[in-house]
Length: 392
Ligand code: FAD
Image (cartoon, rainbow, N blue to C red; front, side, top):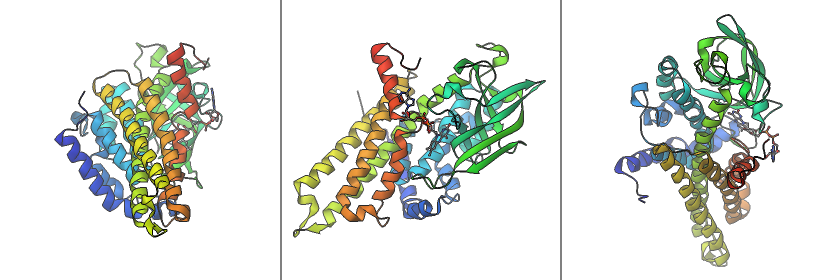
């Protein structure tokens, strides 16, 4: 087993870090205060390749392996989790769903523009009435001639007010997961509106939205996961599989971002602990402070190794679902622990926005909630270990 990085992987990580240190880190608190990143950073991120990682070159992407992808997500998480979320959703959840499930026409239509961030994608699964129980979603798509007409509402949708394309999960059939289909909906389609959710605890630089679909008409060719040779009639009924396979990879993205967040907490804590003096000594000289630093260092390594295992499985084309749940569970809980410790190391200074520790904690807090809460990850792991499905 060789955990060393190739020269290309190191070069990408170093370029990503240098770019983000210059273009993101100095601005992240201001973006957080005003509840929006400066969208002017997106083209630079796209030029570096963030939005095209693992999208094949023939579709305008950078190609590249999943190890490079998780290195990129780690660097984004280290700099600003709000930026990481934008990329994870557009490239990860939407781009990779199109790559995995799309027709050739859909791939050619959307992937080159997603890879360059000319188009941002959003992923519309959660609704006001369903989050963890996404298989019971209520948004409906009804066939009308060559079209589908979609009606419903989505909640907490990352990139929702910025996206040009929304991957919308809607019910085309009966109850439960098998009645769900997925549609690629251009957000300028009549009847589609997005309303910003403001006042979030963290990830404030990132747009989060409520989506309203009111008689949104799309051609049947907008369905993702067809064609008609699969489970349901007219290619219907693949949506839940599309969503779950996207979330497997999405959880790797979130986990990798959390590794970056833990790493940022470690580096920030070391910098503070070695410069802050109490009792005539740097506080880093106190064993109880070193205890916190050691916990941070261990969590960064442990979470990173779980994430790298996922990248390795993905690069070898092996199933990643269970490993992704473990990585997401561990890394997200570690991010919350790390941000808490980072504040503790900073004392009172950790509680104000002059230092990044408080933002780290606010950003970390959502990681155990979205893309499957920690409880949901435990049920997935428990199901694998016991053979008993607690979801049904
Ligand atoms: P619920 O499902 O109502 O859960 C509430 C509590 O009950 C949790 O503790 C949960 O673990 C627990 N619980 C539920 N069911 C079980 C069970 N069977 N066993 C044990 N405990 C259980 N969604 C999208 O579709 N696209 C996005 O881009 C997106 N971005 C988001 C961005 C942000 C900032 C936030 C906050 C959310 C985002 N979400 C998005 C939604 C997110 O995925 C959901 O909030 C999450 O899945 C949890 O669903 P819920 O909020 O409805 O909570």
